[in-house]
Length: 86
Picture (cartoon, rainbow, N blue to C red):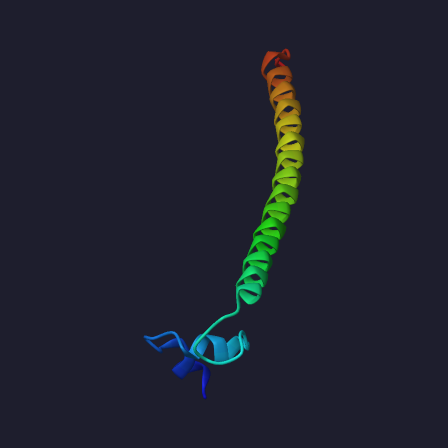
């Protein structure tokens, strides 16, 4: 069976054969569905952790950029208020 034929089966019987869940291609054992659910939860949790880490890095980057902008603004003000040569 090709992956394309599994993905397009309207009755869903290709899914258990594709991922080898249950005793046959008509039923999925509840332990198998619990395992699939747990794997999905773990995957979502990992995505959340990755996004939190990315967010922390972006916050640090933003803080550095804000400090740089403050320094540049200060330097610009100093240049603007400095006496001009005659």
